[in-house]
Structure formats: C-alpha cells, structure tokens
Image (tube, rainbow, N blue to C red; front, side, top):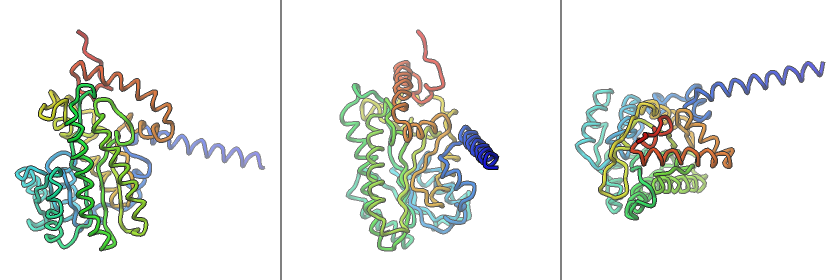
Length: 336
C-alpha cells in the first residue's frame, strides 16, 4: 500500500514538473505574472478611473501604455519632451476609448530638467486632484563599445535614466504616502539584472534603478497600499534602438536592424498592466530564449556567466560587422 502511494506521488510530481517545463518553453513572462494573467484581476476592472502619469509617453512602450490604459478607462497624464508627439498620442487615446478631452492631460517634461519636476508634479495633481499610478518609462538605451564611448555618454545615461527617474519619483512619493496609497512602476530592463556588451552605461543605469527601487520598497513597509514595481522587459519592438546613445552624444545609430523577432509592444504592455492590476513587485517579460536568461541569472549565475560570455562575444562580433546587436543571436555574421 505504501509503495503504491509513493509511486503515485512520484508520478504526480513528474507530471507536474513536465507540465511546468512545457509551459516554460512557450512562456513570455515569469510564472507569477503569467498566473496573474490567467487567474488574477483584469486591468479593465482594477485600473478603470485611476489617474496614471506616464513618462516617455510619446513613442514605443509609453505610447502603447497610453492606448491600452485609455481602453481600460484610466485618466492619463502624458509626458515626454516632444509636445507635438504627445498631442498625437492623446488623439489616439481619445479615438480608441470613451475618454473625453479633459481626461487626458498633455504635460511636456524633460527628465534632465530636474528643477522643473516639482512644478510639473503640482500641475499633474492640480489637474486631477491626485495621482494613483506613476509609470517611469522615460529613458534611452546605448549601442557602443566601452573603449570607444565618450564619458559624456555615461554621464548622460545616468542623468537621464537614473537621476531623472529618481527625481520624479521623489516628487510624487510624498503625495502617495500622504494619501496612503498609490503605485510607482518603473521600466527597467533585462540588463538591469544581467550585464550585456554594447550597453555598459545603459546596464549601469538600470542596475542603479533596480537597487534604488528594491531598497525603497523595503522602506515603505508601513505603507502596504503603496506598490513599488519594476518591469524588466527583454527585446521589445519599439524605437529604443533608433533613439539609443552611441560613442558620442550627437551621433545617431546607423541602423536599427530587424525588429520582427522581438516581442510585440502590445503584448509587453498588456502583461505590464496585468502586473500593475495584481500588485506584482517585479515583472520579467520576454520571449524565449531571453526569458531563460532571467532564470539562469537568478538560480545558476555561474552557468549564466558562461553563456553570457559566449553570446556576448558573438554580439560584439556582429556589432563590428554592422549587424543589429540584438538580432545577432539569430543571424550569422557577415563574411568579407
């Protein structure tokens, strides 16, 4: 009898492990986030009527966030440097939803102009009375080798991605602690927990964000209704490559490369909204094999270093050959 029970338990455990393995092969997010997408709260119900401030809202993930949040019925504050692009996004929000003109505020913002952040925050609060969710999405990436990169690029990356984000957060956070509720969601990156060649400065700025918000979360334990969440996307179809820093501040990226293999922006944003609706503190969002990198770095860092060195060497070779650095994992280098 005992033998039968042990055999049954063993079979159940094997089947359970096999099921998880199969699910992981087709997964595009961590298990907590996927579980929430299947069985958790729907963004359409949890985010309806909330006031959401999005930085970097003029393109890419920020633009898609605006559209999907508008469909959820959230009232929006759209911020970026380019006011004309923000107005275009606002029109798109109104066309895609039942929101009225007064439900979407265009608030131009430069993360580098930190002295203006207090005034901008007051304007946002004055417009709607409060802020329920701050989504820190503004920032730029990098495509250059360390030995060839000006120090000014590193300073610009830290000023924009890290200090600009911290500045806005520090303006909004007292408002949320006073109210006793709110969500601060920050878009980090896979390279916020793992290193990657051609992104030394970008990776450093995202590591800094991870450290800051992980520490901030522990400081706010007396405010259980304030969510501090970080989002770590892998490669996503957006304009992040086109807008990336290179060796010099004013030198643009030569070519963005093929974006087809990357995750669709709409899917990435949908998962982000699921995470916000279900109070997920950290979200890993990526197609395979990139999702595997997250788990490898988390649970087998020595092996992760081995794989990263192999792929990193290939990435640098492809970059020097003039190929898109990200798609290098899926293509053969050019031969002369």
